[in-house]
Length: 83
Image (cartoon, rainbow, N blue to C red; front, top):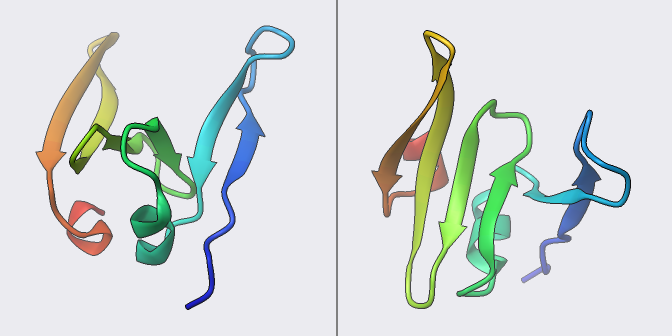
């Protein structure tokens, strides 16, 4: 099995030196993430993130609704279901 390449992309408008973690939109890349590594942005899907906790991985979506940032936890599903 080919190992997924993890990419760090700069955040537009972020302070110099500040970066975000992002991964390609494949199930293999999500599966390759180590547990406990934090929150990763899914490239190509606005507001879709995967959160890697100590023993589980779950998806969440962030959107602005009426000017407020709203976060909805999708849960432990596959990438295809989360999208």
